[in-house]
Image (cartoon, rainbow, N blue to C red):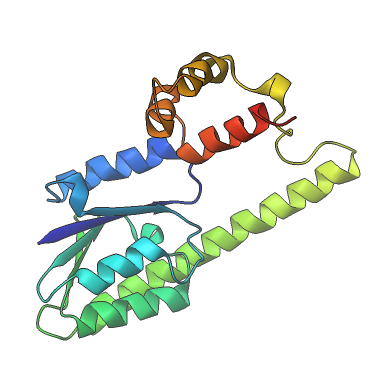
Length: 199
């Protein structure tokens, strides 16, 4: 069985996770139900969907992902993932061009070293980006600029929301349908509704 794993840092990167899903189909995943995806930081060492996938995968199964940084940006966590892949005799397909085949219970030292090296670079890249963001925020604050997104208020809710909110109130559509129509997450819809219904 070929399973896929896709990850983005925030639920606003839907376009990117959809691209990953298309790439996973090209790697042999046959249906969305075999793709485990989540919106989590790459530095989190216990993402729920990845853990669920590693738990259900059986000897000889393949886990496909588009690149090492989608699995994790933590070198420590990557080492733990590779150990699980080895112990469960799985195959890890990274972007279709690099296969870590542990179906016989071991891993080629050169392959293991290469994957871990990619992991080091992925973590380093993440740390550099984080450092630049913090520096930029500090610089903006020093200049008196607003940091982060402006607060969402009733007056700033999207016009599209108000249009479909009336349909939701009339029970013509549910939260999931509203999110699909508005092309946003269910969490965003819940947030908008909460703001709209504040006294």
